[in-house]
Length: 620
Ligand SMILES: Cc1cc2nc3c(=O)[nH]c(=O)nc-3n(C[C@H](O)[C@H](O)[C@H](O)COP(=O)(O)OP(=O)(O)OC[C@H]3O[C@@H](n4cnc5c(N)ncnc54)[C@H](O)[C@@H]3O)c2cc1C
Image 1 (cartoon, rainbow, N blue to C red):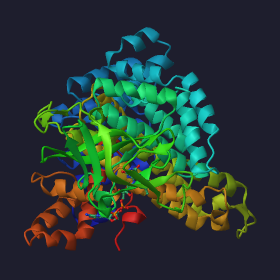
Image 2: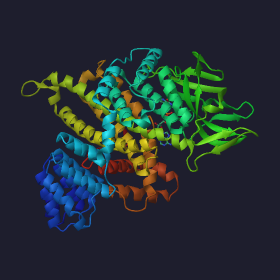
Image 3: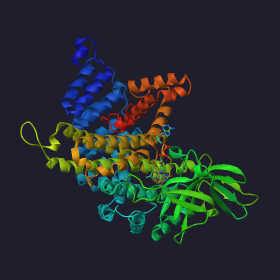
Image 4: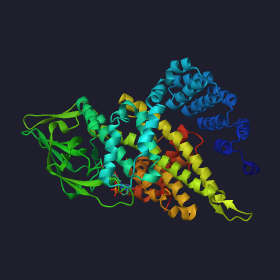
C-alpha cells in the first residue's frame, strides 16, 4: 500500500479488501478497522465483498459492536448485506453470549431471505449456552436445527462410534460384506435416513471416515454405495411400495449395489447407458441385456456379494426408447447368481481390496414389472406396452442424479476427515521425533516447512469444514422436502466436492514429502492415501465437474466474481469464437476459471477463506 501511494496512485477497492483480508489472516482486527477507515477517507465506493470480508475479520476477533455498526451502516451506503455478512454478525453475537442480538440479526437475514441453517444453529447454541431452553425452543429459525440435534443424539453417536470401531479391513470381501450386513441389522442407521434424518446419514459417514487412514477406502465405499447410491436411488425414484421394501432389506441384512458405470462410459456414466431393458409385454417382464462388451457394467462396488442391484438401463417399450431408468433387481438368489447375469471380479486394486468390484454382463436377464423404480414413470401392459410419464418435466434419470448431491457432500466430508486424521496421526509422531537443529535438538514438528504446513492444513481444513457444513445444511432441507436443490446450491455442492478432495490430496501429498521416512512405514495412514484418489472421481470426477463449472460460467454475460474470474471468462468467450477446438486448446484457462468459481462459492458462504490452487489441478 505504501508503494502504491509512493507512486502517487490511490489504492482501489480491491487493494483495501485484500489488505483487510491480510489483517484477518494475522488476526489483527485493529489493522482491518484502520484499513476500512482509510478506504472511507479515500472516498472509495465500497461493495458487498468489502463488507463481508471486514465483517468476517471483525467477527472472528469477537468485535461485536463494530460488526453491528458496520452492517447497520450498509443500506445507507447503498450496499445490501448478503448471506455471509449476516452470518458473520450472527456468529459474532452468538459467540459473545448475546443470543438476543444474534436472534435479531437472524430475523433481519430471514426478512431478506438470507437466513441459513448454520446461522440458526449458532443462535440455538447461544440460547442453549445461556440456559434459555424456552427461547431455544421458541426460536422458529432454530427449528430445523432442533430437528437435526434430535436426530444425532449423544447416545446414538456413541453407539455408532462403538459399532464402526469394530470394522476391520484385513479380511476378504465376503467377511467385509458380513460386517456391513451386521451393521445395518443394528438399525442404528436406517436405509431411509437419507430422507428422514439426513443429519444422521452425514454424521454416520463422517464418523466412519475417521477410520479411513487405518482401514483404507474399501469399507467406506461399500457403506456409501449401499446407503446412498443403492438405497438412496430407491428413495429418489421408487414408489411408496418400493421404498417400503427397504425396511425388509435392512432387517434381512441384504446388500445392494448400484450399476451405472459401463466399460465404455467411465466418467461419462449417466450420459452414456448402453445396457438395454426391453419390455416383454407377453411375459410382463423386462429383459436386461448388455448391448456389447463395452456396455457391460464396470467397477460395481459390492457387485459380487450383493443380492440386489439398482441397475441403470435404457428402457425400450414397444420398440420406443424411453431413456435411462433404474431397476431394482435380484442378481443373486439363495446364494446363486440369477440366470442371465454374469459377474466377474475386476481384480486387485492398489488399496481397498476388502471391497469387491465387479463387472456385470447381462445376457437377457429377466426382471419382473415391479423392478422398474416407477415413481415418475411406469409401463402399462397391453398392445406391446405403453410408457406413462407420471410427472411432466421430471425424468427418472434426473432424480437418480439427485443421489450425486448427497454423495458429493458425503465424499467431501470423507476427504476432509481422512486428511484431518492423517495430519493428527503424523503430528503425534513428529511431536516426539527429535531432529538435529543448529541450536540443539528440535522436534520434527518444529522444522519450518512442516510447521507451516500444519498451520496451513488447520486453516484450510477448518474453513472447508465450515463450507461443507453449510452445503450439507442447505441440502438436508431439500432432501427432507424432497425438492431438487436450486442451481446455485447444485453448483456450490460441486465446488465443495472439488475443493475438499483436491485440497486434501494437496495437503496429504505435501505432508508425505516433508515427514521423511515415516511416510514409508505401514500403519501410518500414508499407505491408504489412494482413499483420496477415490474421493477425486467418485460421484463426479473433479475435471468433469470443473469443465461444467467453466462452461456454465462463460454462458453468463453479466459481470460475476472478481476481476480475475471476469478476465478468464472474457478470454474464453473470445477464444470460443475460434470454434469448439479453442476450448480444449485453452484447457488451462478452463480449469483456472473453474477454480475461480470454486473460490467465489467458498468465499460467499465462508468469507476470508484462502485456498490455493491444489497441486493436482496446477498447470502442466
Ligand atoms: C473403487 C471404485 C468403486 C466404484 N464403484 C462404483 C459403483 O458402485 N457403481 C458405479 O456405477 N461406478 C462405480 N465406480 C466407477 C466410477 O464412478 C468411475 O470409475 C469414475 O466415474 C471414473 O471413470 P474412469 O476411471 O473410467 O474414467 P475415464 O472415463 O477413463 O476418464 C479418465 C480421466 O480422464 C478425464 N476425463 C475423461 N473424460 C473427460 C472429458 N470429457 N473432459 C475432461 N476430462 C475428462 C478425467 O479426469 C478422468 O478422471 C467405481 C470406481 C472405483 C475406482
